[in-house]
Image (cartoon, rainbow, N blue to C red; front, side, top):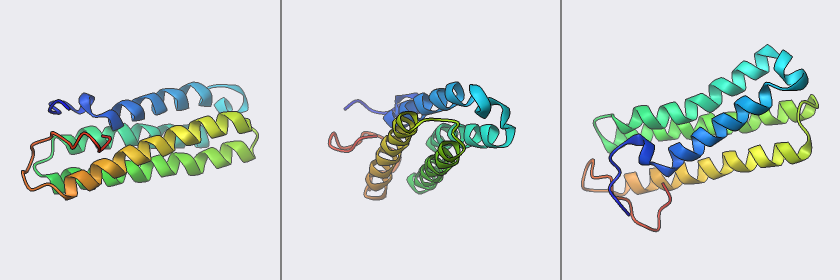
Length: 135
């Protein structure tokens, strides 16, 4: 795997970007588009995932980067919780819920793998992950 030189090279960030795009698209439709509180909250949480990955990337240590990745992971779980509210309010159907929930899970898995990778590294700030670890 090539060295990660920019946050855009991180697979977890690319997946988080797709998640944010999907959240924006679906939350703009129907009754959900008029529920400003939920719409804005889920959008902020989705943005937080990709933003924390980007911000953490330019921190001074792997420990700081890992902390920001953990925050991003928490934000992805926040999106999952808000999807339940959208489902319960009938803003989305079960299929849409499952698709978005699985996208969140994918981001969480990538972030968890990257956090584990960073916590086991000894060569600080050399971002060339193990090919077996999804980032």
